Length: 188
Ligand SMILES: [Zn+2]
Image (cartoon, rainbow, N blue to C red):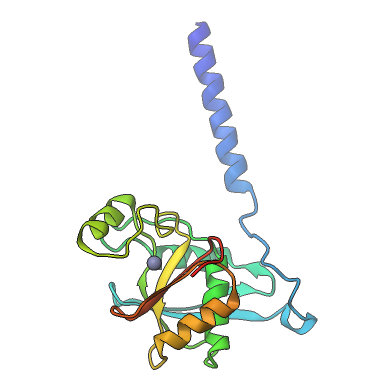
């Protein structure tokens, strides 16, 4: 009886946890310290094309300093591991990097081609076996990195713009013509 009671208590505790975690606000605050008052209510848009799934998405992912939860969920799916279909929640600061990149190269809101989003460990391992330049502990596995290029924009110029943002790691893959951005430490 004691064991059964313990289990039912444990189940009740787990349910409570589920209720409180799903009831918690999912919006997180974006960094606003550098924004002027006029920008605080601004819509932040992204137009993305996934080169593997041929899907295109255009949405407002942030309004003022608030990320839009529904948009983030759509982006998580859009950036899924296209080999396995697995979805993981992305760090939304990546979207600010993408958005700011389009502005800093003089094409605000311009279309970005996504060549890689989330990668499961198994996908990362198989890529490592067949490709050079794939890190074992790639931040793609943590949904903290995106590979991209922009149609009509020199990828070297895109790399310089990403480095100038100083918001995380930047990689450059000239042979495959894309850059890697992540929210890890600032490096190149
Ligand atoms: Zn990458």
